[in-house]
Length: 144
Image (cartoon, rainbow, N blue to C red):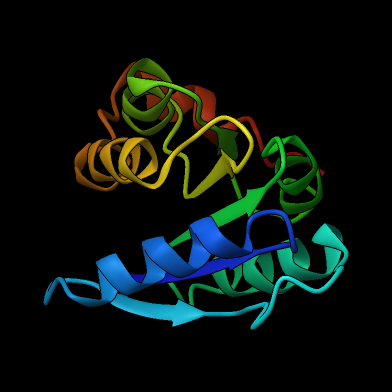
């Protein structure tokens, strides 16, 4: 599975840890879109860069990290075919995939440790979309 990851300056350390961990798993090809340092940066720049790759099908999934995860989700969700979900707990990770077919996970660098973020991403990456009645609803998301 090809996974893109990006952050702003507040999410840099968490992004770096996640990217290194996922790169060590043979089933994941990780594309780190930056930033390369924790110097101040604007989250929309990175959200749009990653969301464009997801929308075009260049990557299967994306992971975005900022202070809260909310700004990244708002920017990423401006792109058609992108379903970015803010994930704070195991339920968010599981149901955003199973019921909403989320393809971008947005994480909070302020609320999550590397260990908790990796646990949530493992659930999110491994949970399949259930389809069925949920597919009809997901199809209604991209109407504009």
